[in-house]
Length: 113
Length: 114
Image (cartoon, rainbow over all chains, first blue to last red; front, side, top):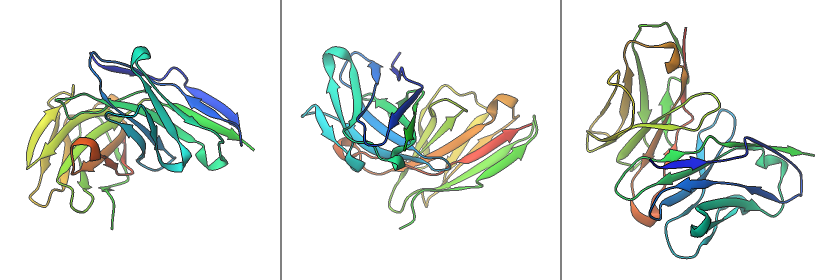
């Protein structure tokens, strides 16, 4: 069965520091990959997605992610974190032929001033 | 342009009761999906509605049912509530498939079962 693993439950970084959130998926073929952000009391907002083509994708709010087929990974990065980035981040996968998104358990990001 | 709206925002029920949650998709969207997000977990897919039919269903019991209306709005019904049904229920709408695919989520309905 398909699955998504986010190994880091909590991450704390200082404002201005770089960030990398890890995501690994389990699926035989190339899936469609997504990163969402959820702020308290709000729904999920799409940061970026990968369907095909260039394995480095750019998203909103200065985020980027790189798809590495050999590692079954889709890690999210940001070169300089802002205090407003504090939120929970979810990696998700959708496989061809289905309509459901499979989400990881999320990584809660804390930003120190 | 209103995004995805869900009602109510919070709900408290007791075990055995039934509940109906409502969702209005983003303007122009014709597909509605429902997700359950338990505390500390990622959202889990319940089902998706398209053209007023359930198109795909996740691993949820038959106590969970839904409906989509001609105006694309949707309802999620849960019968015989259990304590374990306490969660944030998220509605998401979409229109385009393929590389322009994007799910828009509502802020959710927080259901507490006592």
